[in-house]
Amino acid sequence: MGLSAAEIIDSLPSLRLTVETHGLLAKKALGQNFLLDRNITDKIIRLSLEKQNKDSFAGDNIYEIGPGPGGLTRSILRQEPKKLTVIEMDDRCISIMKDLQARFKNRLEIINGDALTIEIKNRDEAPRHIISNLPYNVSVPLLTGWLKDIEHFKSLTLMFQKEVAERIMAPINTKDYGRLSILSQLNCKIEKLMDLNPNCFTPAPKIWSSVLLFRPLENRPSAQELKKLEHLTTLAFSQRRKMVRQSLKSINGISEKLESLGIEDTRRAEQISPQEYLKLASII
Ligand code: SAM
Image 1 (tube, rainbow, N blue to C red):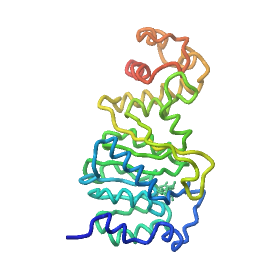
Image 2: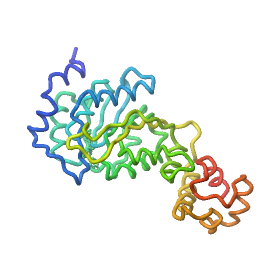
Image 3: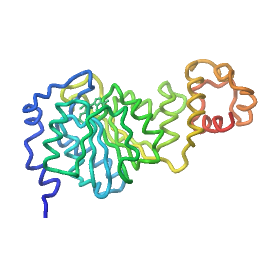
Protein backbone atom coordinates (compact mmCIF):
# COMPACT_ATOMS: atom_id res chain seq x y z
CA MET A 1 0.00 0.00 0.00
CA GLY A 2 1.25 3.55 -0.81
CA LEU A 3 1.93 6.20 1.79
CA SER A 4 -0.95 8.33 3.10
CA ALA A 5 -0.99 12.02 2.17
CA ALA A 6 -0.11 12.92 5.77
CA GLU A 7 2.91 10.57 5.73
CA ILE A 8 4.15 12.07 2.46
CA ILE A 9 3.77 15.63 3.75
CA ASP A 10 5.42 14.82 7.07
CA SER A 11 8.46 13.59 5.11
CA LEU A 12 8.83 16.87 3.14
CA PRO A 13 11.28 19.67 4.04
CA SER A 14 9.60 22.36 6.19
CA LEU A 15 7.72 25.12 4.40
CA ARG A 16 10.21 27.75 5.59
CA LEU A 17 13.11 25.70 4.23
CA THR A 18 11.24 25.26 0.94
CA VAL A 19 10.76 29.05 0.68
CA GLU A 20 14.48 29.58 1.39
CA THR A 21 15.71 26.92 -1.05
CA HIS A 22 13.59 28.39 -3.85
CA GLY A 23 14.53 31.99 -3.00
CA LEU A 24 10.85 32.84 -2.81
CA LEU A 25 10.83 36.51 -1.86
CA ALA A 26 7.22 37.72 -2.02
CA LYS A 27 6.25 39.87 -5.03
CA LYS A 28 3.76 42.63 -4.28
CA ALA A 29 2.49 42.76 -7.88
CA LEU A 30 1.27 39.16 -7.54
CA GLY A 31 -0.52 39.86 -4.25
CA GLN A 32 1.83 37.52 -2.41
CA ASN A 33 1.33 37.26 1.36
CA PHE A 34 2.18 33.73 2.38
CA LEU A 35 0.77 31.55 5.15
CA LEU A 36 3.69 29.56 6.54
CA ASP A 37 2.14 28.40 9.83
CA ARG A 38 0.62 24.94 9.56
CA ASN A 39 -1.67 25.57 12.56
CA ILE A 40 -3.40 28.30 10.59
CA THR A 41 -3.74 26.50 7.25
CA ASP A 42 -4.95 23.31 8.97
CA LYS A 43 -7.49 25.37 10.92
CA ILE A 44 -8.92 26.96 7.75
CA ILE A 45 -9.44 23.53 6.21
CA ARG A 46 -10.78 22.02 9.45
CA LEU A 47 -13.35 24.80 9.93
CA SER A 48 -14.46 24.52 6.29
CA LEU A 49 -14.92 20.73 6.60
CA GLU A 50 -16.75 21.06 9.93
CA LYS A 51 -19.27 23.56 8.53
CA GLN A 52 -19.90 21.19 5.64
CA ASN A 53 -20.29 18.21 8.00
CA LYS A 54 -17.43 16.43 6.29
CA ASP A 55 -14.58 14.36 7.75
CA SER A 56 -12.26 14.79 4.77
CA PHE A 57 -12.23 15.68 1.06
CA ALA A 58 -12.09 12.01 0.01
CA GLY A 59 -13.85 11.57 -3.34
CA ASP A 60 -13.91 15.33 -4.08
CA ASN A 61 -12.03 17.41 -6.66
CA ILE A 62 -10.43 20.57 -5.30
CA TYR A 63 -9.08 23.62 -7.12
CA GLU A 64 -6.61 25.89 -5.35
CA ILE A 65 -5.86 29.29 -6.85
CA GLY A 66 -2.37 30.65 -6.13
CA PRO A 67 -0.76 27.87 -4.05
CA GLY A 68 2.40 29.99 -3.56
CA PRO A 69 4.92 28.01 -1.49
CA GLY A 70 2.20 25.42 -0.69
CA GLY A 71 1.18 25.80 2.96
CA LEU A 72 -2.56 25.68 2.31
CA THR A 73 -1.85 23.12 -0.44
CA ARG A 74 -0.29 20.78 2.12
CA SER A 75 -3.27 21.19 4.47
CA ILE A 76 -5.69 20.40 1.61
CA LEU A 77 -3.70 17.33 0.53
CA ARG A 78 -3.75 15.99 4.10
CA GLN A 79 -7.53 15.65 3.64
CA GLU A 80 -7.02 13.13 0.81
CA PRO A 81 -8.98 14.75 -2.06
CA LYS A 82 -9.53 12.63 -5.17
CA LYS A 83 -7.44 15.24 -7.00
CA LEU A 84 -6.13 18.72 -6.22
CA THR A 85 -5.60 21.08 -9.16
CA VAL A 86 -3.45 24.14 -8.45
CA ILE A 87 -3.44 27.23 -10.69
CA GLU A 88 -0.44 29.54 -10.28
CA MET A 89 1.23 32.31 -12.31
CA ASP A 90 4.61 32.49 -10.59
CA ASP A 91 7.22 30.11 -12.05
CA ARG A 92 9.08 29.91 -8.74
CA CYS A 93 5.93 28.51 -7.08
CA ILE A 94 5.34 26.17 -10.03
CA SER A 95 8.76 24.68 -9.39
CA ILE A 96 7.79 24.04 -5.72
CA MET A 97 4.54 22.44 -6.92
CA LYS A 98 6.52 20.15 -9.26
CA ASP A 99 8.51 18.82 -6.30
CA LEU A 100 5.22 18.09 -4.57
CA GLN A 101 3.81 16.46 -7.70
CA ALA A 102 6.79 14.07 -7.82
CA ARG A 103 5.40 12.64 -4.56
CA PHE A 104 1.66 12.90 -5.19
CA LYS A 105 1.69 11.89 -8.89
CA ASN A 106 -1.73 12.16 -10.53
CA ARG A 107 -3.41 13.27 -7.29
CA LEU A 108 -1.93 16.75 -7.97
CA GLU A 109 -2.40 18.60 -11.26
CA ILE A 110 -0.52 21.84 -11.95
CA ILE A 111 -1.78 24.58 -14.24
CA ASN A 112 0.72 27.34 -14.94
CA GLY A 113 -1.43 30.35 -15.83
CA ASP A 114 -3.72 33.20 -14.91
CA ALA A 115 -6.77 32.02 -12.94
CA LEU A 116 -8.81 34.86 -14.49
CA THR A 117 -8.56 33.20 -17.91
CA ILE A 118 -8.95 29.54 -16.88
CA GLU A 119 -12.39 27.98 -16.76
CA ILE A 120 -12.55 25.29 -14.12
CA LYS A 121 -16.26 24.54 -13.90
CA ASN A 122 -16.17 21.42 -16.11
CA ARG A 123 -12.58 20.21 -15.80
CA ASP A 124 -13.26 17.28 -13.46
CA GLU A 125 -16.35 15.57 -12.20
CA ALA A 126 -18.41 16.81 -9.25
CA PRO A 127 -18.25 17.32 -6.32
CA ARG A 128 -15.87 20.26 -6.87
CA HIS A 129 -14.63 22.79 -4.33
CA ILE A 130 -12.49 25.91 -4.68
CA ILE A 131 -10.11 26.83 -1.86
CA SER A 132 -7.81 29.85 -1.95
CA ASN A 133 -5.93 32.50 -0.06
CA LEU A 134 -6.77 34.81 -2.94
CA PRO A 135 -4.37 37.27 -4.54
CA TYR A 136 -6.05 40.46 -3.27
CA ASN A 137 -5.75 42.38 -6.55
CA VAL A 138 -7.97 39.92 -8.46
CA SER A 139 -10.16 38.52 -5.65
CA VAL A 140 -13.38 40.30 -6.66
CA PRO A 141 -13.32 39.44 -10.42
CA LEU A 142 -12.46 35.82 -9.56
CA LEU A 143 -15.36 35.59 -7.09
CA THR A 144 -17.92 37.18 -9.42
CA GLY A 145 -16.88 34.78 -12.21
CA TRP A 146 -17.35 31.73 -9.95
CA LEU A 147 -20.69 33.04 -8.62
CA LYS A 148 -22.03 33.01 -12.18
CA ASP A 149 -21.08 29.31 -12.46
CA ILE A 150 -21.90 28.43 -8.86
CA GLU A 151 -24.06 25.39 -9.71
CA HIS A 152 -20.84 23.58 -10.67
CA PHE A 153 -19.35 23.90 -7.19
CA LYS A 154 -20.19 22.41 -3.81
CA SER A 155 -18.31 25.07 -1.86
CA LEU A 156 -15.85 27.96 -2.09
CA THR A 157 -13.51 28.55 0.87
CA LEU A 158 -11.88 31.91 0.19
CA MET A 159 -9.65 34.37 2.01
CA PHE A 160 -10.21 38.08 1.28
CA GLN A 161 -9.05 41.38 2.68
CA LYS A 162 -11.40 41.94 5.66
CA GLU A 163 -12.88 45.03 4.03
CA VAL A 164 -13.90 43.01 0.94
CA ALA A 165 -15.37 40.23 3.13
CA GLU A 166 -17.44 42.90 4.89
CA ARG A 167 -18.80 44.14 1.56
CA ILE A 168 -19.73 40.58 0.57
CA MET A 169 -21.64 39.92 3.81
CA ALA A 170 -23.06 43.44 4.31
CA PRO A 171 -26.76 43.64 5.26
CA ILE A 172 -29.22 46.10 3.66
CA ASN A 173 -29.06 49.70 4.97
CA THR A 174 -25.32 49.72 5.65
CA LYS A 175 -22.55 51.63 3.91
CA ASP A 176 -20.84 48.42 2.73
CA TYR A 177 -24.01 47.05 1.10
CA GLY A 178 -23.76 47.05 -2.67
CA ARG A 179 -23.61 45.02 -5.89
CA LEU A 180 -21.15 42.50 -4.48
CA SER A 181 -23.37 41.84 -1.41
CA ILE A 182 -26.47 41.36 -3.58
CA LEU A 183 -24.84 39.04 -6.12
CA SER A 184 -23.14 36.97 -3.39
CA GLN A 185 -26.16 36.71 -1.07
CA LEU A 186 -28.65 35.80 -3.81
CA ASN A 187 -26.45 32.91 -4.94
CA CYS A 188 -24.92 31.55 -1.76
CA LYS A 189 -25.21 30.94 1.92
CA ILE A 190 -22.11 32.73 3.26
CA GLU A 191 -20.45 32.10 6.61
CA LYS A 192 -17.33 33.66 8.09
CA LEU A 193 -14.85 30.99 9.23
CA MET A 194 -12.23 33.25 10.81
CA ASP A 195 -10.43 36.61 10.83
CA LEU A 196 -6.65 36.64 10.53
CA ASN A 197 -4.42 39.37 11.83
CA PRO A 198 -1.61 40.69 9.60
CA ASN A 199 1.10 38.88 11.60
CA CYS A 200 -0.21 35.52 10.36
CA PHE A 201 1.34 36.30 6.95
CA THR A 202 4.84 36.59 5.50
CA PRO A 203 5.29 39.42 4.68
CA ALA A 204 2.64 40.99 6.96
CA PRO A 205 0.10 43.06 5.00
CA LYS A 206 -1.26 46.32 6.47
CA ILE A 207 -4.78 44.99 6.88
CA TRP A 208 -6.67 42.08 8.45
CA SER A 209 -8.06 39.21 6.34
CA SER A 210 -11.16 37.03 6.63
CA VAL A 211 -11.96 33.53 5.40
CA LEU A 212 -15.49 32.98 4.07
CA LEU A 213 -17.31 29.78 3.14
CA PHE A 214 -19.78 30.02 0.23
CA ARG A 215 -22.32 27.28 -0.46
CA PRO A 216 -24.79 27.56 -3.33
CA LEU A 217 -28.44 28.15 -2.37
CA GLU A 218 -31.07 25.85 -3.85
CA ASN A 219 -33.18 28.69 -5.26
CA ARG A 220 -30.87 30.94 -7.20
CA PRO A 221 -31.48 33.56 -9.89
CA SER A 222 -31.51 32.25 -13.47
CA ALA A 223 -28.80 33.36 -15.91
CA GLN A 224 -31.28 35.80 -17.46
CA GLU A 225 -32.28 37.24 -14.08
CA LEU A 226 -28.60 37.63 -13.19
CA LYS A 227 -28.03 39.66 -16.33
CA LYS A 228 -30.93 41.97 -15.51
CA LEU A 229 -29.79 42.18 -11.89
CA GLU A 230 -26.39 43.35 -13.04
CA HIS A 231 -27.97 46.09 -15.15
CA LEU A 232 -30.35 47.13 -12.38
CA THR A 233 -27.78 47.25 -9.58
CA THR A 234 -25.25 49.08 -11.77
CA LEU A 235 -27.83 51.81 -12.40
CA ALA A 236 -28.99 51.98 -8.78
CA PHE A 237 -25.56 51.97 -7.12
CA SER A 238 -23.84 54.29 -9.59
CA GLN A 239 -26.11 56.97 -8.07
CA ARG A 240 -26.26 55.49 -4.59
CA ARG A 241 -27.44 58.65 -2.82
CA LYS A 242 -30.32 59.29 -5.24
CA MET A 243 -33.88 57.95 -4.92
CA VAL A 244 -34.45 54.96 -7.20
CA ARG A 245 -37.17 56.80 -9.13
CA GLN A 246 -34.26 58.97 -10.33
CA SER A 247 -31.42 56.42 -10.66
CA LEU A 248 -33.64 53.83 -12.43
CA LYS A 249 -35.61 56.29 -14.57
CA SER A 250 -34.21 54.85 -17.82
CA ILE A 251 -36.27 51.68 -17.19
CA ASN A 252 -39.72 51.92 -18.77
CA GLY A 253 -42.58 52.38 -16.24
CA ILE A 254 -40.20 51.98 -13.29
CA SER A 255 -42.42 53.75 -10.73
CA GLU A 256 -45.41 51.47 -11.50
CA LYS A 257 -43.21 48.38 -11.40
CA LEU A 258 -41.74 49.37 -8.05
CA GLU A 259 -45.23 50.11 -6.72
CA SER A 260 -46.54 46.71 -7.87
CA LEU A 261 -43.85 45.12 -5.66
CA GLY A 262 -44.56 47.40 -2.70
CA ILE A 263 -41.20 49.19 -3.05
CA GLU A 264 -41.52 52.98 -2.55
CA ASP A 265 -39.74 54.84 -5.39
CA THR A 266 -38.35 57.29 -2.82
CA ARG A 267 -35.99 54.61 -1.43
CA ARG A 268 -32.27 54.70 -2.18
CA ALA A 269 -30.19 51.85 -3.65
CA GLU A 270 -29.01 50.61 -0.26
CA GLN A 271 -32.59 50.45 1.11
CA ILE A 272 -33.67 47.67 -1.27
CA SER A 273 -33.03 44.07 -0.24
CA PRO A 274 -31.42 41.41 -2.47
CA GLN A 275 -34.80 39.61 -2.77
CA GLU A 276 -36.51 42.88 -3.80
CA TYR A 277 -33.86 43.49 -6.47
CA LEU A 278 -34.45 39.96 -7.74
CA LYS A 279 -38.23 40.47 -7.94
CA LEU A 280 -37.69 43.71 -9.80
CA ALA A 281 -35.23 42.04 -12.19
CA SER A 282 -37.83 39.40 -13.04
CA ILE A 283 -40.39 42.01 -14.22
CA ILE A 284 -38.23 44.47 -16.16
N1 SAM B 1 -1.67 30.05 -1.07
C1 SAM B 1 -0.44 30.69 -0.68
C2 SAM B 1 -0.44 30.92 0.82
O1 SAM B 1 -1.53 30.96 1.39
O2 SAM B 1 0.64 31.07 1.38
C3 SAM B 1 -0.19 31.99 -1.43
C4 SAM B 1 -1.29 33.02 -1.35
S1 SAM B 1 -0.86 34.59 -2.04
C5 SAM B 1 -1.99 35.63 -1.17
C6 SAM B 1 -1.58 34.57 -3.67
C7 SAM B 1 -0.95 33.62 -4.68
O3 SAM B 1 -1.66 33.75 -5.92
C8 SAM B 1 0.49 33.87 -5.01
O4 SAM B 1 1.20 32.65 -4.99
C9 SAM B 1 0.49 34.48 -6.43
O5 SAM B 1 1.66 34.16 -7.17
C10 SAM B 1 -0.74 33.82 -7.02
N2 SAM B 1 -1.42 34.62 -8.08
C11 SAM B 1 -1.51 35.96 -8.20
N3 SAM B 1 -2.29 36.31 -9.23
C12 SAM B 1 -2.70 35.13 -9.79
C13 SAM B 1 -3.54 34.81 -10.91
N4 SAM B 1 -4.12 35.78 -11.64
N5 SAM B 1 -3.74 33.51 -11.22
C14 SAM B 1 -3.16 32.52 -10.48
N6 SAM B 1 -2.36 32.76 -9.40
C15 SAM B 1 -2.15 34.05 -9.07
